[in-house]
Image (tube, rainbow over all chains, first blue to last red; front, side, top):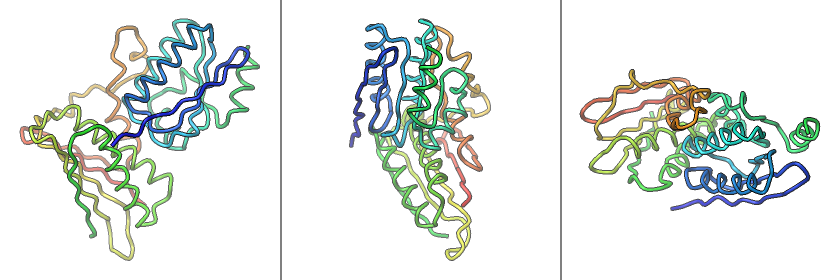
Length: 118
Length: 140
């Protein structure tokens, strides 16, 4: 049994949005990291992860997201999340992710925050 | 008390089977969607901990989902996850701190127990030479 994660990327001026669809486990986290590091290599410093299509994550997947946050801090970039389920939102807050990554209820709010800070 | 038992092999994504069972039982007792989701995530974490750290020879995890209270007035769900592995000392597990985890070269892993405690109403962990038993309760 395997539930692979699907990713889509929308590149915009000053912002790249990564859309996830599926379970973020170790493999899913690695897929996201691969895409995120590719976007960083392209010159993107602002990344938004839209998790609307993700209903469940695990701590191994989240640990890989923390690696991406570490990388964003290193390059003085910004990683944010939007469209989280209440449980994923609660989990991110339990772990303290909100201190290091923006967490927004919806995509327009997240984009306006990025635009405002650009 | 109604009870469902499940034995899962330690294979990739098997935690999702446990999660789906938790969801089905939660729906049966009319638990809210948010509480079911929290319970599902805690079950996933408990299974992953067993898969990754138990070193159980049988490579299996035993789960019990028990409805708390009377059949016509369920109070919540008690989930027991048991492995027959090498055990660990729960009191010695260091609580992860994100600021520390974000330091270069530091492992980003080790969040499972913190997440379980944060999402469930009650958590008891018994561990020894005969394995580890995690009992988690979520009130309706």
